[in-house]
Length: 324
Image (cartoon, rainbow, N blue to C red; front, side, top):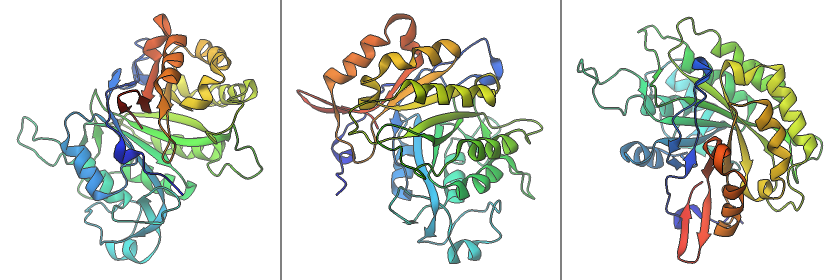
């Protein structure tokens, strides 16, 4: 049974994703982000968009049924609203859910049209002003989502990000602690990355800033943590596709598992000076003790602290605070 720790948790501004000024094309969002996690319904999305203290939104994508008729005027990736309503389409939902009141197209329209009027009085300029992390759970959702983001429709609608926002393309592309059995990875690294790159590079005049958020399939109860082989496999993939130099990479690592294997990531941080780590706790996972968070923060103090972000639920003596 999955426990709803989210409802008990107050979020604090703990997440850091910083920029490397040596790569102007791979700048990631500014260091201070306040995250909200699992924004997979209209109600939660509206709440996040209306909250000025929230600067970053994480959402999950899979194929399923949208329970209400789409309100989107975007016709990218599907043929019609009627078709959307009758068959599985990309929706915002976390497994095992297969239904949602929020389709991918509606999500994109809502996040891009929630911003105040610009100086010209245009309130329909498709500008995305918050950091958006798209956590792809099924490969079938990737192509239509990217097509919607980078293609112009007949009215020349074009999504844009700002200097403070970006689209983080997230997937668990490698097996990891507690999840190493054959067939466990559904978002295969080569398929996911090559599909993303194909669409990202079609932007003749890039208006959307993309970066990659890459992780491992994990079980937070595993007692071993990440191995050196895990780190080397991720290093090889990042190097093969030149991801850091071309767009930027954030490694998404589970807090409990990272604490067991902190030194194993020294090599990848050294190999890619602009690479970042985002430490997270997941849906259904109990909050971490404050002492565990302190261990991670102390390990990455001084010259490394600006490269480490936090999206965690944290338990302390006075109650719950923090993150994901």
